Length: 417
Image (cartoon, rainbow, N blue to C red):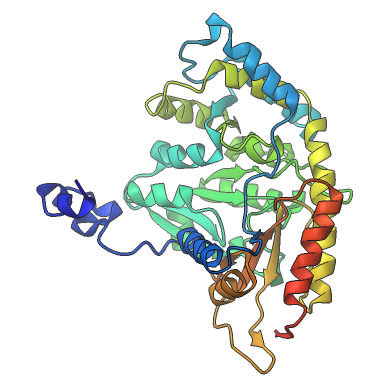
């Protein structure tokens, strides 16, 4: 039976207001990523013989390390790994604490009370508000940014206050701009550095300011460090937890998806304040029965081999260099980020003697539909598009070919900014 048929039944009136109430499913999906997918499908259909270059991808383009895969295969065959893992196994927690010490210099993490596994960062961001948000409480999020924690804050009757990330402020939030009335009602603040989508990196001075602000207003800091190990050109991986006082006010979330090519495995961890970790663990225990012990042991292998990530950063740094050079030769004004897999590029206002771009989304749709180059638009704080260096290419020669093809397709256009 079709969905349209079911929309005529009582079920249509049972949906919660938080997802649309009785109108759920009746309007077109205007989600940005869904629009991009539809545009990509249309471009492929209209130009089936032309390669679509996907610079909008956010998944790594390679398989995980063979050692990680071999560990999974071996552990999956052991009967002791067949059961539920609940909130994680000691081996993974210990590996996470050792990883924080080796890669980030964070030496004072107790694996038993200050680490808990998560099914990736997204799951953690969805669960944490349930431990802290009551109706009327506020979560501060940055825009552009990842919305998961804000979505679940609203589900719980809380409010979201957005702070813009601007080029003028080096894509760091201006905490002083948050009104006193908002700050006094704030329970959570979400930060993410190196940042998605801007690629900006945070400093110890900035995190010190965050800690002071959090203590002043009794706010819990949630730092999403999904890209923290992916740094370039001499910038060492940097953790919020390495700053004095950080553990007093919050937690840091790590994901193995980007740093270890393990997207789809849903493995990560939360570390930091033991009370926050305890509360997260208790609520998480009511969400799932734990990730497979075999996967946790494979992830522990990865965490014990940070050289896997170093090899990836060499590739991503090289790709950033090539893409930045190509875009600047085409008239864009782009600087290589110090971290993450993203290049945040100011969208042009139009084409000399031709069409205008009213928004980043307008420009992004032009790139997909007419040049078969995909990107992700952001119009939250200025007009920017996000390019990713996780595009499909095997080896440096193939990378150069892809970058050369991007230049070729855009070389007949003079953009206005």
